[in-house]
Length: 536
Image (tube, rainbow, N blue to C red):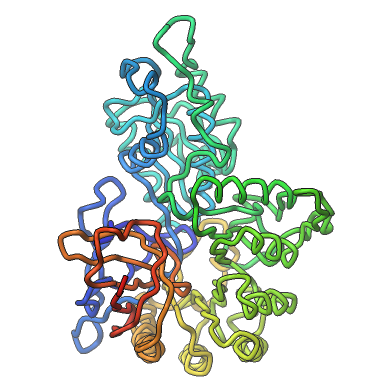
C-alpha cells in the first residue's frame, strides 16, 4: 500500500487523506515526520459519534524525514560509477536533510541537495551518521511553526550541528531563542546562503586529500536530484505572491511575485523529461499570474521565441508530450484559454484552484481576488469547453466573522459547483496575519462542527461523481505495486499525487512497473477511489 505521509494546508498541519483502500470509509492515519510508519491521527467524530471519513487532503505537504531524503538521493545516484560506489563510506562528509512543508519548499530542498551533492557531500541516512543536519522549515501558521521548531529541536538533540532554512527562517530570533545552538538561519529559497553555511561548518571534500574520492558532479543529470519518485516531479515556475490575503503571510515570507524566464523553465522541464519523468506538476504561489512581473518578456528556447506568459508556457509544455498538471491557479479570465488547451487534450484537464470560500462577505474579509457568482459562471463555462475537466479546491471553515448564514452559503455553493476534489481546514491564526485582528472569531467547537458538515456534503458529491466513471476506460499512471495483493496503485488524470484519490488495479502481471501507463476499465468506486481491471 502507499507510504503514509504527513499533510498540511498551505504548509500547515491538516486532516489526512481518506484511506485509499477497499475500506475507504475509514480515515487514513497520519504519520509523524520522523516515523512515517507511526499513526498519530484520530478519526473525526460527527455529532452522532459515527466516524466521518476525510476527503482529499486540503493541500500538498511534501514532508521528508532525514531517512526519506537519503533514500531518494541514494536511488537518484544508483547509476553512479563503480569507482564512486566502491569508495569508502567516509570519503566525503555527510549532510542530513529534513524537509517540511509544501511542494514549493520541497523544490528548494531538492535544489540545495543537488548543489551539495555536486560539491561532493553525501546525504546521511540518520542523525547519528550526519556531520551536520539542514532543516528546511515551514512557517505558515502556528501549528506548522511548532512542527518546525520541534524538528529543529530533534535534530539538535540527536546530532547537535544544525542549520535552519525555509519560511520559518524569517523568524530567526524566535528560532534562536528556543534553540540557541543552531549554527545558522536563512530564509526561504536562500540556496547560496545554505551552501555557504554548510561549507563553513563542514568544509567541502578535498580530492587531493583522498585519492578514493570522486566528485558526483558528472553523475547528476541536468534535472538535478528530486525528492519525488522518478516518474513525476514538481516544476516551480515562480516565487512569491502579489496578493495580500488577510489570512496569509506568504508575501512576507517569500516576497512578491518573481517569475522565472520561460527558457529557464523549459530547460528544466526538458531535462526532467529526459531523466524519465512522465508527469510534471506545475507549482508556484499563483501559477496563473506567471510572467506578470516580467511584463511577459520574450525569450528564445529551442530556437523559437516564447513569451514568459501562462498560456504560452502551457502551449510549450504540451510539446513535451508528457502529463502536465496545473496547481495553484486563480480563476482569472485568461485561464479560459488554457482550459481550451485542455479541451484539445494538450494538458491534463485538471485545475487546482484555491477558492477558499463562497460568501461575499467572507471573501471580502479575506481580500480574495474573486467572487463566488463569477467563479460558478466560470466553472460552468469551463465544463462546456472541456467536459472532462476535474477541479479541486480548498476552503477555510470558521474564518473570523463567519456566521451560520455565511457557512450555509458555502454549502449551497458546493452543491451547485459539484467540485471533484475538495479539502478543507478550520481557520487558524498566523503570526503577522491581518485576519488575527478581525472581530468575532469563531469558537473552535463551531469550526469543527462546520468542517464535519462540509466534508460530509462533499463526500456525497465525490461518491456520485466517481460512480459516474464506472464502466469507463481510463489511462492511469502506476505509482506503486503491491506485489503481495497483485494490485497496482495508480492515478488517473483526475488525481494529483499524495493529495487526491487512487485507482486500484487488480490482477496485474509481473510486467507492470512503477511509472508505466496502463489503460484500465473502471469496475467500482468508493467515496474517493476507483477500482479497475487491466487486461494487459
